[in-house]
Length: 450
Ligand code: PFF
Image 1 (cartoon, protein in one colour):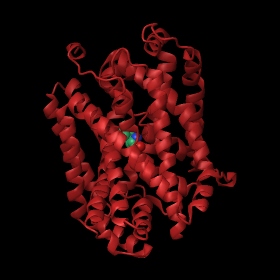
Image 2 (cartoon, helix red, strand yellow):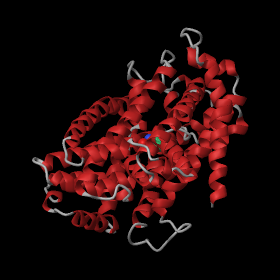
Image 3 (cartoon, protein in one colour):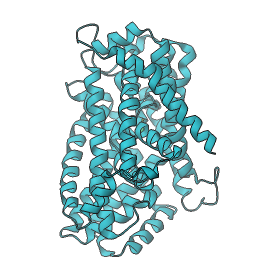
Image 4 (tube, rainbow, N blue to C red):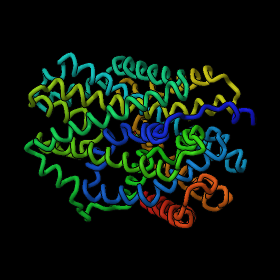
């Protein structure tokens, strides 16, 4: 199996590592999921706990995954297998989680594509009240074939990038799409801050109300942090396997974490002023972005432009993330099952398309079919963010903290002694003690609640 590491693709430019990793992290998790989860969990206090989780757990675990990926230069399963075969299960957990996330992520991505088209055609601008937008959204997601069509289109777009390969597809798309995303987001934040509900929206997002904290708030914040950063799932292992030997892993992880958090906060800045301006409950769930925003844009001059730009932003953010999830599975099938990269990509595309079809139908036609009371769509979201990713994170920090040779970890952090690294001790301490203890406590606490 060693031959793979010799002719493996490597990313080119200096910024590429940050851009592709940030492309994975920044996605629907920041712009669609973060605002509604924060809205459900008290706003400001959620943001505070979320940032704590990002710094204390997300950042060290991202570095641990980077080190595992670059030291082995393998896919998620191959990497853990090469280091210690008994820990390969972390890799399998990753591939499974990537598959399940794509199952619902592709569906939401399809919605964003459809909303972009409807913004362009002026169909969204022809509605006016929040009720009309809600009815439009419900009607759309429960339609048996329209969302499927857009989801399949989106899946094919992802497939096309993966088929172009690591450098021409993944790297080049991130270089164009990520800067575009930032420009759009900053323009929209300024626009939102000029709305009448801006002050109330900002208070909701930034003023913590500690009476809202429960054990499940902690797990939700933790799950959101892992989901948003793309950690605990081997994406960062897979991407780091393409990093150059000169890439500074600490700077890369820090930049990715900061960018990701910035985008989530900016998404809150875009959305909450709009929510309060329209007098909508911030806790209206997954539909928040799709119902509140078109209504807000509608009252504005150039409404079609704003809403097209916003949904295009979501499409762009989603695409760079679906690419990374797809790559986790494709690289695994290619290297471990010895399929050609082409066949591996097709197998991934077809199997995730099948799951996404079921998840999409679970919101309409197959709505009666429940898993623990949840639709397939909600079950996939819940099981990955709240169970598989935190578990993946738990075993990753235990593995790198306790099992991996500390010298090997240090070599990766310091690029074999060519960079000064003074945080090695702190990182090992966080990975050995702080991360596993917090993860275990949060899990146990939640189990006790149910
Ligand atoms: N981080 C992405 C987001 O915030 O939308 C979602 C995601 C991508 C999660 C890749 C996990 C992953 F491996």
